[in-house]
Image (tube, rainbow, N blue to C red; front, side, top):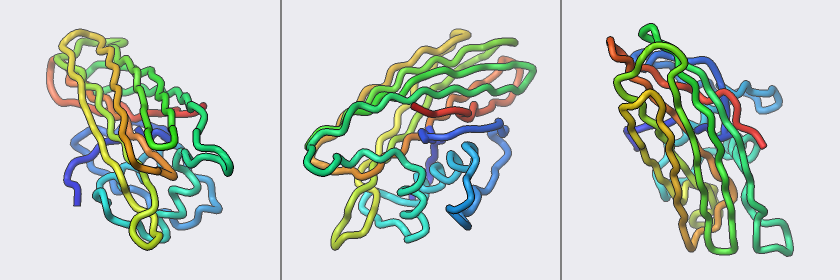
Length: 208
């Protein structure tokens, strides 16, 4: 199982900010009839990214979650192309006497045999000074595996670090020969103040 993590729930999702030193257990999907908050969606997506490696099928409960909350990218019947999807996201975090904000967009384009996406994001200090700002994301694609089960078919993550008081990052990637039904993206900027400690900025909005 994957030991690393990353949080764009790009539903991609949303929330309040926990300190990196405070581990919180992801909420369980007890009933998809009840709407989950953006923070809960993001936490569950992060949990799925850690739970499944490429080639592993998901449980029926996790499949239902992906069908309900993940970005759907399968072409409509009679079409081989999914229209480009643009989503915006933002988040605010604080710690060590500092405050920082992230703004960005996720652009995904799905073709017949190719998926490409671009993430543009800026994390900047609003108060206090940072020793380092790191923009980070993890992307996963979910599709049919083996005899018909839904599973993880692709995984990618990347980081970009800056020592300035703002960090502008562009992540571009594409993959071929896969037919995803759903994609999930977690984005987790991290700020290290000049004095001590560090904190993640959890994305609070990710929507069309």
